[in-house]
Image (cartoon, rainbow, N blue to C red):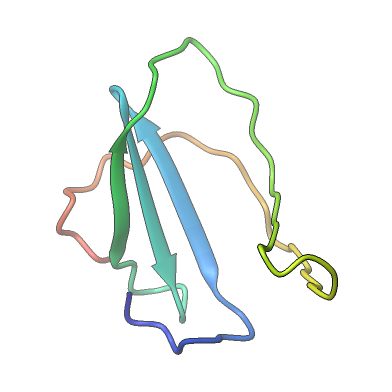
Length: 81
């Protein structure tokens, strides 16, 4: 993935386009390596928002910031920008 095993801060980008979910994660907000590519149901709209959970149960603390929704990225899958 290109990130430290336990980064304190990172960015995550999820793009749904033409029945495909693309997930990218960045440590610096500039380079966006591909983490996951998966089929995703096509719909006219989606309900989205941040969420986090842990298999370890109690003790996880997470803060979300800079959440935004925009048009899907049309960049090539191998474009890390």
